[in-house]
Image (cartoon, rainbow over all chains, first blue to last red):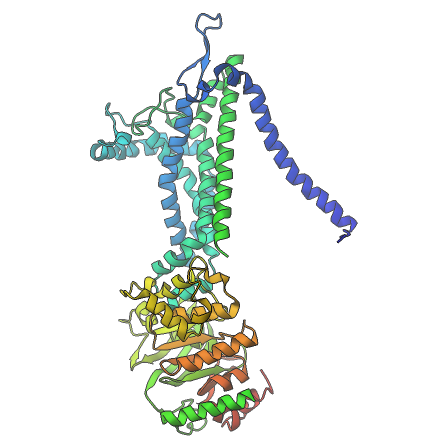
Length: 312
Length: 290
């Protein structure tokens, strides 16, 4: 069948196609740029770039050789982000359910607009708030956790110093991504078909019963999408982590200890005084982060599509 | 043809059950008096949405094990009335009500009543078939039991019994684990009926249950309703006069003249359709307006 489009349609179609292609192109070019600049490092360092624990710019005269690897920073990126998700997702789901099903209309509208404001707060302020306000409280939480759960390797802390740990950074990141996850979750919960919720009530269900039977399954894919948006933000977060963590090149899976860092904060820290060769290493690190966030997003899309398909 | 034969069957059933309908009291008081145990009764029921008065002083009685049709043009408040019978009305933020709804003689709006527990006894089927999308056919039937945390062991028996009563068992017995959404519209609606039956309600409210269905499915559901009424009390809102005459024992005619909806007349369906007291009822059932 041959479809004839009018001139207006054809122009419109080209314009929107161009828009779509441009965004893909920009993404591809960024990836390409990072790879092209970093490829020399990948060649020189090999797989050790990902797994190694040493970041040395070298002495320049070759006496101390330059060596770059981002293992601890990559691990730190993932650890702090997972901590953030661990705290942010349940909190966001609870908040979204409250706003959608329990809050009186006035409180709801206030909360919704405040949430949108919170989502727009620059991460710098979260970092400053983390250091100035939250740290002392977070340290107490960390001390308690270590006291009671210290037998578990993750919560072990031998030095008894709890400040500037991945745990605290993760909590601040959690506070940072709660608004976006809550906002997305509330949006999908609010689209639960009214008659399904009514059916639950009509069957003698309580509000919690209706939420469990209908609202949560219905919103699952949307919440996963929201969580991935939050995760993307946490993975790439620079300033807040830069302010909150001591950059230490050592694998640290004792999340209560004062060592850590992530890729983005590594780049921010080293960028200003980097040697030309180190700069390439930083861009190579950027490429790794780029791949990481890209794969998280693709995984999220796959999850969302799969759960969406499961619901006819 | 069909209508006549159905009405015939109905009058026979009525005689068998020994129902005597008294003449409705004359103009003003809108009460159908019947000598038969009451499944449900409303007294002086009013409804508001915000400042908007949508129903005024509805006094209506629903005899046990019968089908009562609520008829009337759009906007007369009959769906609102239906939703007040199981306290679904109160989920609408601006909604308010006054009056009493008596189930077995006690007011379901009394402060000590647990609304969720009460709704176990008053099931509801909605206009659009709405099986739970994330659940299988079997899970859909058992959803109410799970929601209300009822302790039952014979799940398979309940599924078979409810699907049979809803007239769906033969069609789905080999694919109970298929998604509820995989059924046709009419089958989905019967699944929803089966779902409401699983918690063993004594009253079933139906809000235009066939309006989204094809004629074949509609007839199947009407048969189901007739069968259900041998055990439970059914209240059905319908826009379809033929349906009201086919399926109901009693009819209540609601009307709004711009103000709040009122109950014009309620009586045995045959009388409502052949010899109503109020001329407005006659005009409506003959399709002169609405």
